[in-house]
Length: 300
Image: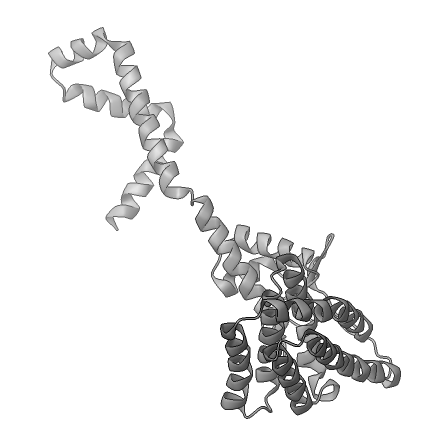
């Protein structure tokens, strides 16, 4: 209550303008000895400089307290980017849904700047699109677009697995095996969520083993672009057990240091998924998608 009264008093002084300042100055002068008043009047410039320096230091201190460091802003932007991306990939935000930046800020308990920066980066990656005068929309991926992604993956990942064989260490092979074992141990090999997690981790690890950071990053982005499609259609596009066997074949070829065998196994793995998608694309009835509401709530 005392703080409220103080704020109200301060606001009253600002509204009164110079009059309020003059009244305060008069009250202060009345309580100061005459000698002090004379001394202060004799050195007006020094007093002004001292007051100006004190005000500058106070303002500088406030600025330092309020302005977040560049590293903190970057960290918050990274957090916003990863959390929004996860919400998109796991269909919390559906393809075609309009997003509201303010609502996302409330959902993630973050400020506008990191959320805005994250959405800009997600637009570059093709997961969202900024529509003028409408807002941000989650980009839908058609079967044709996912097939195009798989075509790109075949061109890149077949070569990357050859390079991965050349650079593979025992620790790399053990890590790939642990990725596949973890899925089977935790989920019995039949969970869609477990497969999506395992598939992405397996391919990203193989790409990293190639020692080509640029192509490895490309593979990661291609997997993320198609992840939402697997959540929507995985039950009809893939045989989880067959895909697990294909992963094992790739791993065995890497462990045997057989680059051509690993390349054939990778091509077969991606080709089998591509063929199923083409079958769906040929036989699926046409339908018109309706955009979801413009809020960040769960839409499934």
